Amino acid sequence: MDQVVDAGLSAGVCEADLAALPLGELARSYPQALGLLRRLRLDYCCGGARTLREAAVERGLDPLQVRQQIEDLQPLASDAPQQPAELSDYIRRRFHDTHRAELPELARLAHKVERVHREHPRVPAGLGDLLERTLAELSEHMDKEENILFPMMQRVAPGMGLDAPIARMRAEHDDHAQLLAALRRLTDDGQAPADACNSWRALVAGVNKFGEDLVQHIHLENNVLFPAFEVSRRG
Image 1 (cartoon, rainbow, N blue to C red):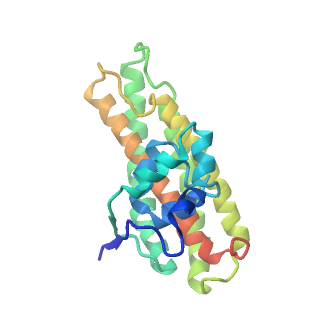
Image 2: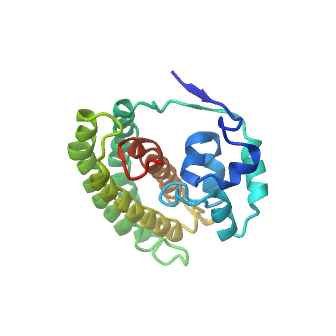
């Protein structure tokens, strides 16, 4: 059943402190803000340790205005479970299976667009190869989670330290963030040309959707699932 997350401030966090929250904690407490954070390029996944104030200033944004935008958002219904065992299975079904199904077709479509429109000045040259590389690296990463890390989480109670394998997964998430940045560059920040054909438009839409999924995927692992099994991140 969907869980409705309160749009109000988290218990114990006063209004003046919202800009001081780490982005990862902010994303976890205010899931309705995820779209806003993505649009503002405030990285709550791999950059989740930075505060909202720090990240906003780095992007040339007014932290107080961003805070107000977040406070004005309405509650969001979420179907992601909170218990670690259920969450890891949800991640596998919702994101791992989806990436495996969608990326091969996106790579095929990218190669087609590159071939047919090779003379176009905005052709996404190299996008097909980059999507194939993304699939290869992401598949290896997901296999390690499904065959090693997630089963370990099933065998131990939350609070038990799995810092070493999780640190490796976090590092690979950083690599995935670099791949996403490259995908954005090759697709002109997710915008198809005005004269793009239907295949080109479908390709850009598919890459955008994959990017949204991967950001949410990494967020749920980095900021919700992993901390339950990391001794080093407990205050």
